[in-house]
Image 1 (tube, helix red, strand yellow):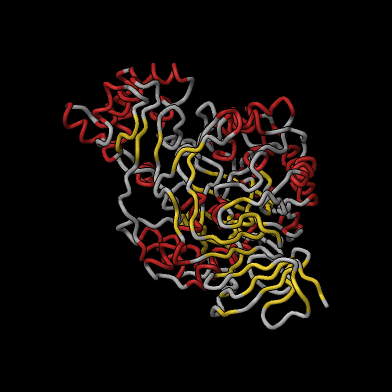
Image 2 (cartoon, rainbow, N blue to C red):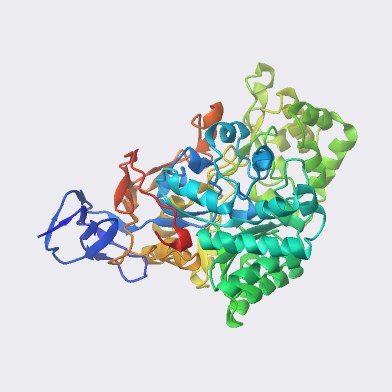
Length: 577
């Protein structure tokens, strides 16, 4: 008789393929699904009882920034708590390889600004034992992992490594430099990279560098990107991720089309963003994807489905960086920033930037809590004389004191050494618009969690749990079968994960088991503060309810919300174990 490692019995299987749910047992051996349904010719060493529970493929998250955190947190939480079993590192062109030893500190400083990852945590939690991409991948493979990962070539790191930071930010590459970058990407692909990524947000980047200047890829010329695309075309391998400004200017969209045509490989484009009141915003994006699909261009749309709130203070805030005025007053040391916030001409410029915001900046403001008048004072750093403001909006305080809401924000920030905290209230989301992104296009999947980034501001890594409880259970806008296809099978296909994303015999046993009726997030909206990062740093977290078991490569990593300590995750070179 055969001996299996694990049997999941009595559950309702939603296998990720869109076929109707069915009841079946699943047997697992050597990290793979050995049999689904029927009676297995043997016994299992361990049995998980799943009566009344959903058994589905683990979630695949294609937009994270756990590049640093995975070095001290094998489970890439909070995503790992919320059922993510496979994810992609190196998004937006950012990462830590290739990197010369003398540039390590500057590389970490970049990430403190552009992705708001605490510097002290990186200093304490990362053991740099690599320079090149092959060395980096070997190091990542050695690191304990509770999730599976694949890795992009971070294009900003590549350009800086070859050209130097100043040159990479100020001029196109020479022919010789392009040849070297193509060679290094080819070498990295041989070693197991999945492709390359870029953020292209222009000179007024929403996510700027440590010194307030645009990131390397924000202003890189077309040919430097197309040079890398030709590497993938020649190999007929890999895919690309591109992050663009919210406005989606026609020139930017034209370039994405050129990129897809040049590479002839999948492009993961972001983001498809629904608003509360204007369906034309997301429909325009969907029409563009459909037109390009009809032309044979393999473009997928990553939809921004995160419903996490923002709570922030100006000591570490970077998401107003699309405004030169705000970028100026929020760059520098704390003392320098407070001094700038007191200067009348800089205050006036910050007010004008809000009141006269262009379409791109308005969209950013809407995404992080709206116009500052809507922001609510949440905390004043234990200053008794300021407690009277807690719970009031900046607009209300401004009316009471005859100030612009921006003046209120800056005054409270200066009075608290930049620690005053402002909360973006929940102004609602449109479930019909969100669901339409998936029901009207076969080329979209949910996410853009930014897991591992901006962890003091919001908790996007909980999007998987929220997607199921909101759009499937509560609003009933999507079927459970469709949701799991969009959260597992389709992103796995788009990103080249081999033998994952579905429950099939012979596939890797990455599985979530949960009670749909109990699925929830706590605390909701902005989460709670957890002091669990290296270097004495903190972050916001949201914990899940309703997950009975999370299984990675046939091994339980979480059981009833408790971590088992197992680290069965793998670096999936070329998308496979």
